[in-house]
Image 1 (cartoon, each protein chain N blue to C red):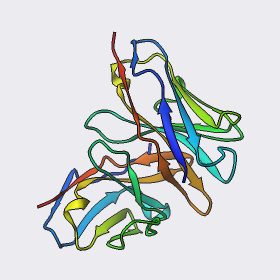
Image 2 (cartoon, chains in turn blue, cyan):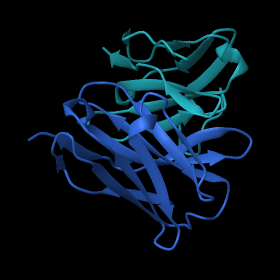
Image 3 (cartoon, helix red, strand yellow):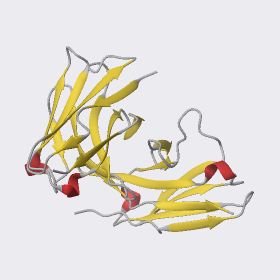
Length: 121
Length: 106
């Protein structure tokens, strides 16, 4: 059973960089046809996709965030990471990491528990 | 950019059938997924590839997708099904989520 766990600072100052890591257990991040993704959810609002990475390093980002986002992968640690630059209060949200299965079709099959990141001085 | 539209809320009586719609331009030409999210919990995949149920998801959950609308149907709705539901599809290499529908079982 694959498990994902987000980690990182719960408080980030405006204009600084939000950095989160997702640790994958129960399987190798390099095996199979999987992408690894970040999604966020402001309190009381809907889900917003941030981006995804394949273990080859290939990435796709939400066009609305693309200029401020970098997703990277560290296969040796079975982790992938998110960096969101120049944050504002609007970036305050619960951040989820998730696995995307990509065989016949593409879908999010496993999610982390989520971590709340607050942007405030 | 591609958009998916869901009704903000749907109400259903216990034991009845709930239907939640998700509309998008030519959505039927894409595959739709549905997620259930209960308060304080992560989303859970309940339908993928329009109408397939992951292991462990009850048979009362079903899906369809045609034209511009995907529909999640919950037959014999139970109190435990009260949750927010999100549709999702891929537009090229970008994931798009609907705004979510709050299902109330009363």
